[in-house]
Image (cartoon, rainbow, N blue to C red):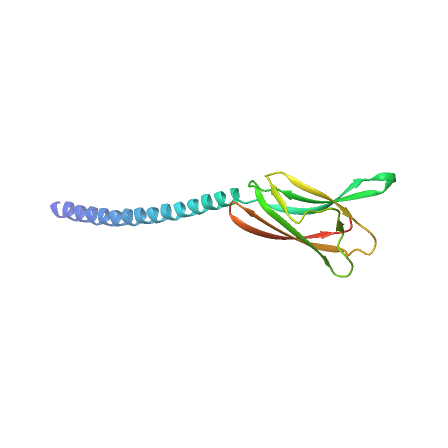
Length: 156
């Protein structure tokens, strides 16, 4: 009977040691997982803060009713991002054969566009235009200098 109790105690000690080792390993794995999750969360926060510091400029042509039933056209630059864009320049080049629409009295520099703000300038369309144009937008925001290319159709 004492032998059985001794064997049973030995088995209990072995099982306790095995479970203790396993708990230590699980604790270490949980610590590693928590560290990885913390790093991912920090990267997400940094990315979110960077996104808040960026303006998101885009361009488009817009058709409006004009005189005598003829449409008039505008070239529009929008700031869809949360940050202010400053020192904004743009360059419009035709893609393929034809010319790019001419902008009437367009400035060389747009001083600034706040979030949600837009800049418009009349555009002159005629036959013989290129099917599309590339607009290269350059600006500075809280994240630094930015550049974006937008391809626009002249069929509006």
